[in-house]
Length: 121
Image 1 (cartoon, rainbow, N blue to C red):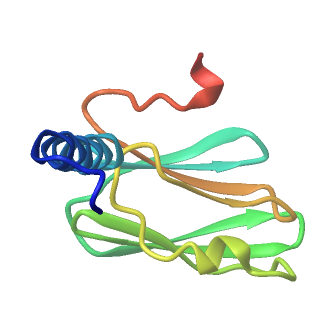
Image 2: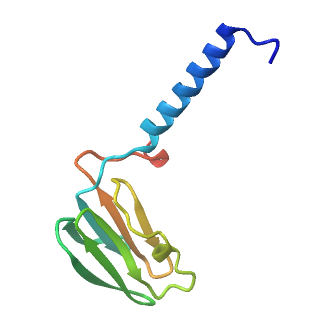
């Protein structure tokens, strides 16, 4: 620490604050207002996230149950062996998705503005 001067510490602190601010800005997303449910690549339902409801979607392995609550949605039950889409938990931000690939069912949250990911570039 003997080689650092006051200006060096200031630059390090400013850089740290900048990294934290950019991280918070980049990882915060818009809250979604619509759930899009797909089966076999086709849109089955588009549901606003305004009230509690449950949706059953049939796939090749059986029925996937999706729960909708105000401002969020999740895959509550799925016949897939590893349960990865169930483990996603509640989805709230635009662009989040839960994919039940063995059963060919997916749940995506959309907001007012489209969310882009690396596939969009």
